[in-house]
Length: 203
Image (cartoon, rainbow, N blue to C red; front, side, top):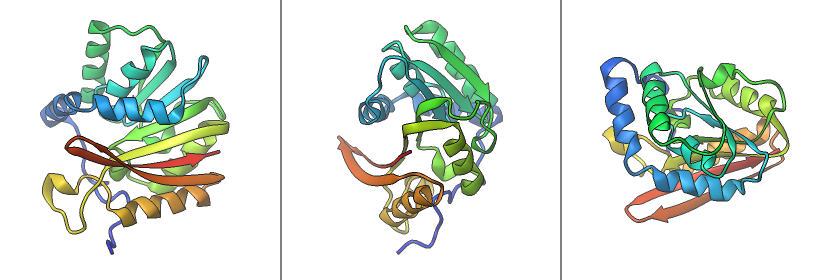
């Protein structure tokens, strides 16, 4: 059993030149992640989606292509610069907004989004308690929150450790219930060589 918390890489920040490099690596191969969470969320016309830790904006643009309004937030300015540039080059149909912010201080009103997701980001959140309190605050009743992470084996090191073990995913699901989510689910998905786990919470 892993004794590391779900945010076991909370001290890693993407800033400066390394932020731009990290953003570029996130552009390739993340389309499947974006399509998966959009399918699981069952996006509806009129939805407002919040993408926490949006990086270069792959999932934001994917949802916005269906005409959905999407807000992408990220604490890293280099990530947001790449997201804005790529969105200008591939302008989607829906309304897209960007904000530099962390999960512990979301720049949105109470009960303003039905769908919220965080892709390969929760393991970097500095404060899970504060983050989940904010996520629950901005979500409407009947909403859905999805946290997607790469499946990591116990004891993994280096880049292989940037994800969740089964225990870490289960621990995060338990935290969702403690923060007012009425139901939770943990599901594994294989997308070719990329294997991910999605923790879903409903309000």
